Structure formats: C-alpha cells, structure tokens
Image 1 (cartoon, rainbow, N blue to C red):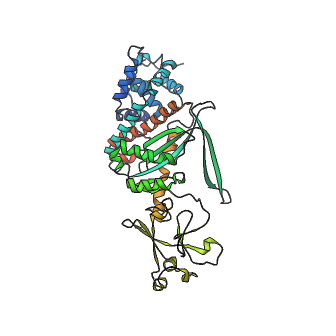
Image 2 (cartoon, rainbow, N blue to C red):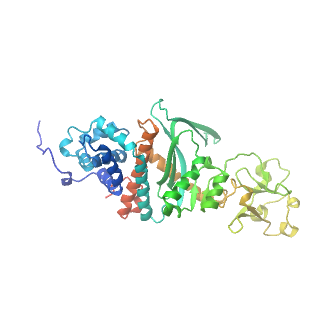
Image 3 (cartoon, helix red, strand yellow):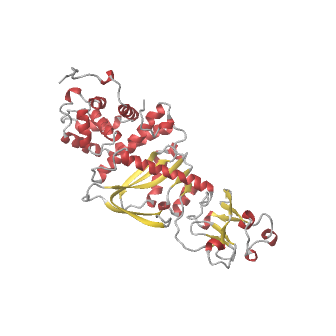
Length: 439
C-alpha cells in the first residue's frame, strides 16, 4: 500500500480554515468574557492545570456553535480534529491524550457556579449589539418554549401542558393538548433580526402570561437603551391579559399585539346601561346589529368600519357598516343617533374608549389590517426556538436539572448574539442570523 509522508505537527494557518472554524473564531472574538475567565481561574488556583481555562471555555462555546448534543461527542471531536483543538487554544502536544471526562465534568461544574457571570456576559454582548444596530429592539416577539428533560427522573422538572387549535383534513378546528415533563423557556426576541434580548427558564408548570411583565421589567433595568426603542410587543393568545396590555401601553408606551381569547360565546351590548344597536364581540370586534330578526349572529351583526385610533381621546373610531359597505340595514329605528345622522350618506360614527375592556380593546384594533400585518412578526420567536433545537443541539440532549439546563440554554442564546456581533462588525448586518462563514 502506498503511503504519503506527512509531518506529524503543523500549523493550521498553513492551510485554509473551514467555514465553521471561522464562525467559531468570530464568536470567540465577540464575547467580552474576561471577568468569567478570571473567576474560573480563581476557582482552579492550586489545583491541577493540564488544560488552560480559556481553552476549556472556548471548547464549551465550540460545542454550542457546532450543535453537539453532549459533552462526550464534543470531546471525541476535539480528539480527532486538530484544527478545532488548536483554535480553542489547547497545547498541540496534548491532543493525543485529549480531555478526560472527569476534567470536563469538573470544569462544567465550576461553570455552573458562575451562572450570574454568564448572564452578565449575555447582557454585555446584547449591549454591544444594541450600540451596533440602532434599530435593534423596535419590535419584540414573546413566547414560551417547551424543553423536555432527559429521562423520567429529574426532581426539578415539572409537568407542562399547552393547548392550541389546528385544522383537520375537513378544515374543522380541533383542540390539541401538548404535554411534556421538563422546563419552559420564556423568551423575548427582536422580531426583525430574530435575536434574543431577554429570557427566563423555569419548570414547565409556570405559565407564560405571568412572566411577561417581569421580562419587560428586566429589559428596562438591564438594557435601558434598547428599552427606549421598543414600539410593539407581539405574543400569542397565551399572553392575553387585560392588566398586562394596559401596563404595556399606559406605563411603557409599548403597543401590545396580543389577540384576545374567545372567553364568551355571545355578543355583549357596547353600552350596558342604554339600549343601542352597537355590540362588542367575544374577541373585541365592534359590530352593529343590522338585522334583529335573524337568529344567526353572522347575519344579524355586521362589523363596523374601523376608522383609526384617536390617541388624544384614547378611543377607537368606527363608522356605520351600512353606509360604509352599502349594506341593507333593518334596524335603523333602534339606532341611538340623530335621524339625520342615521339616514345620512356618511352614517353614524362611534368612538369606543379603551377603558370599555382593556383585554379586548387596544390602540391597534385586533380586527384591522395593521394588526394582522404586525402580528405576523410573532413567527420570529418560533424560528429562534427552532434554531435552539436544530442548530444548537437541544432537540436531542442528555441534560437533567435546572442549573444544567439553564447553562446550556443561556450559552446557546449567547452564541446567537456573538454570531450577530461578528457579522455586524464585518459590515453585514443583513446576515446576523446566517450560519455561513463569518469572515
């Protein structure tokens, strides 16, 4: 068999580095991790020091960047990949021995004790990105993500349930109930750049809605520059709460884009004290009863034409549907307005104050085209959740325990920000979500 003589050791600067290695280097260069490394080195002082702390930390980040589901798979990759071994900062002469599982486990244990510094590193990296991207944080998307624990024995894991509706083959909506045993990630992302800006990890039994305002308060405290930019916050029906919507708009000036749940089955009179033809629907639609004799609501009621939000009056403005859409109205005599308005070409104008129901009514009318257009931004958080699973290895993991899970999740989100910083510094902000070569 023919053999090709090759040197046993060489510098990887003599050959072209792979795209993945360039991406890793950009992440390592973007993170201001000096305080964390100093704390880890203090922990190791006086103990065995076969592998430098910075190299071990870089290897942890490499495992996240390349989506390794376990430490064992990363250690095998380090043992056979001399390029990765050298980029992380390890001594090339020690590669044949690799890193023992005991040394790796001990390092991760030390890393978990400094979760506070990792959280501070996330905030510092986000602050850097905020300064680099003047429009970061303008539109936010919020959602909860189910993360199942590994196995069935985890004393810190909890049972979680989430229900949603999806159409069946006949087009009929059916209720789906999702169950998992583990944890729930409460995540806030920038809806335009699809990057994380705040997060919490709790047991799966903690609901989504109660964590919305604490996450907003966290942003206000730790990222004041980004917080001042926030214009909209979009979330699904799981966050439907009147007091939260009121606080977002009244206290923080944030437009809530959270659809209302259908808690009632009937139309309610807009003015409960006086008889009129104007009604409020189960999800906040403002309608006029144009045919009092038709038993079917879809024919008896017609949605009024939305005319916009009057900020000075804190009211939503609507116009008579018969005049706006040329409908035949069979209930004109019951309309509580002046006869000349009732029979006029423009029709009646109704102003509905937000205070009528803060859960159903907001500064952006839920049944308007603007709400529909902006609500589409919610899919940004779903795509971030997908990357956490498929790119950063949480879809098939071997993690038990809240501290271990929080470390892995926080490092995944940190790598997302580090990757984005690398692209922006290369003057390519349009690629902040790209997994291509960042060089």
